[in-house]
Length: 397
Ligand code: SOE
Image 1 (cartoon, rainbow, N blue to C red):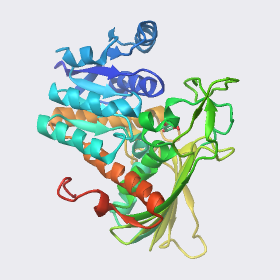
Image 2: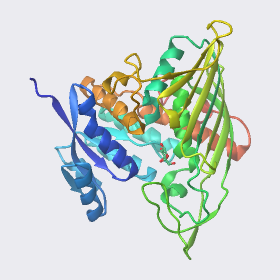
Image 3: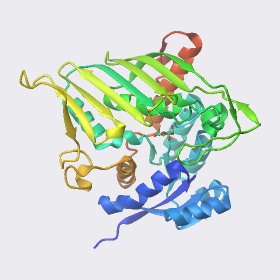
Image 4: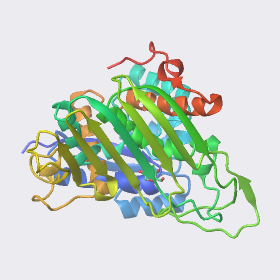
C-alpha cells in the first residue's frame, strides 16, 4: 500500500479550540480517506507545565514555549492558530512568510485592516489558508446549502439567525480576555456574530448593507480567569472595565435582495449555544438549530396540499454531505465532527494546492460585515459593505 504524505501540524494555543482541533486532527484519518494525512507534530504555549501536559494528553509529539520556534521548525507544514484574537495577525503573517500553510480561528483579526494584511501575506506567500468557521460543516448545514443551490427553495427572501448564550450573566464572572477590546476586537459581536455572518454568507450570499445596535449590560467585572467550560466566578477586590459588547443585533440587506435579521447575546438566559437560523424562499423554507445539529427542518411548497408542513430530516443518510464517513443512518454525530469535516477540506486543499472556503478571503469579508455593523452603531445609520471594504482589495466571487 502506498504511504500517504504526512502533513505535520504545529498548533499555537491549546485550550478550548486547541482541544477541538487536536481531536479533529487525530480522528480525521480514522474516518476519512484523504490523500494526505495530518500528524500532530508540535504545540506551543507560554506556560511550560501547561503546554507539556496538554501535549501529553492530546497526543502531540513535542511542544515549544514560544510560537516563533514552531514557525522556525522545518518539520512543520501547517500552523494552526487557536490563540486569542489579538495574536492571530502576527502569528499568521510570520507563518506565511515562513511558507507554512495556515488554519486560523475566527474572527480572523481585531480589525478589517489587520485581516487585509493577513490576506495579503498568505496570497504573497502562496500558502494554503482557511478560517475555522466550523458550523458550515455540520452535514445538515451542508445539505441546506445543496437544497438552496439546487433551487429547491427558489428565490431567497429572508434569513433570521441568532447565536444566543448565557454564560456571562453572573456579575461576578471575571474580566476574561474575551471582554477586553485590545485582545478580542469586539465582544459577542465578533465571537458569535462572526459565526452567523459566515452561515449567512455561505447560504444566502454577500451582504450589501447593515444597521445595528449593541449593548454592554455589565460594565465592570472582577479580575480573574474562567475554565475551559466558559465557567468562572470571582469574589475579587480588583475590578476592571468591560469595553466590548455583551449583545449585538443588526438588520441586513443582501446583494441578491434578501433581508436578514441577526442577533447575538451572552445574556439570553437558558440558551447555551442557541445558534439557529431560518431561511425563507419563494418555494420553501429551512430551519436549523445547533443544539439539534443533525436535523434540518424543511418545508417545500410543492408538497401535496394537506400534507404540507415542516418535515425533520435527520442528516445522517449516505446522501447527506460527510455523513457516509461516520455511522449508519440515525446514528448521530456531534459538535466535534464539524471540525473534522472542516479539516478534511484543509487536507484536500493542501493535496490539491488551493485554499478551500472558508479561507482568509471569507475571513476578510466577514470582518467587513462586523466592522460595518460597528460603524453603523457609531453613526446610527445604515452602512454599506462597499464603504468599509474597497472592492479592489478582495476579488469578488
Ligand atoms: C464562546 O462564546 C464560544 O466558545 C465561541 O468562542 C465559539 O466560537 C462558539 O462556537 C461557541 O462559543
